[in-house]
Length: 303
Image 1: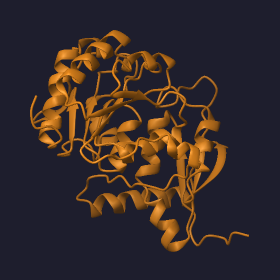
Image 2 (image 1 turned 90 degrees about the vertical axis):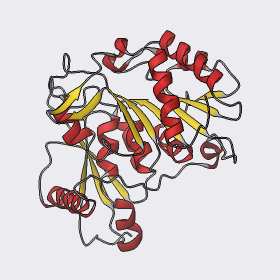
Image 3 (image 1 turned 45 degrees about the horizontal axis):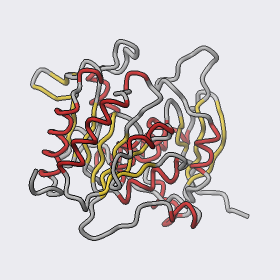
């Protein structure tokens, strides 16, 4: 029988997968469990009927429950209402302390995720001299983050030409159409994987290219260099202003030397959104910025 913890810390799961993953990654629950035996509790935030969750499209609770039950440092408590209380206040205090200790920049902590041997075997094996690039194609889901099959196909076609043959690319997407983007033996996909596998994949990557979505937090947890595409979504999500993104979603990510961001910049006048929509991003420009970022991270020495 598990002993009663000295402290109870509650982590809220709300909005999309990215919102939940960020909330999990900003709390050092892994060392709290393995050093002190304290397991943090996760509550799926329940929203009133007809009310839009801040993250837009919320995942089914069972997807998150499957993930949480694979993390030894966490306890799944299921759905709940608007949660407040001492355990939530401890969460806030921990986050503030972590931020203070890291120069007022939010840190992201990796945590243990258990996979079956069969699930583990599906992850790409590390091969010396053969970097792995993860690309989150987001073929389905939030409309404002979709770039379209043809754009990704054009980008990948030119990327394969520019990269040495030993490079490997894995497309992170659950949409079956992603299989049609595997236009080279160098490209594979994660269609059919569960969320736990896809998050663990980040630990094997050398670089990530992603639309602003949950993979950026998985990469941040494992300190992986990445390129993030940030389209302006304020037409449909007015709260996603440049100021809000910089102060919350991208706190700890923006101005990070390992992270290149397209579409969100900090200026002397304040943060700005510079990519009106995904349709305004050209495959050639993304290719150029990808290769440039790979060079800056010493993952590519010519192109």
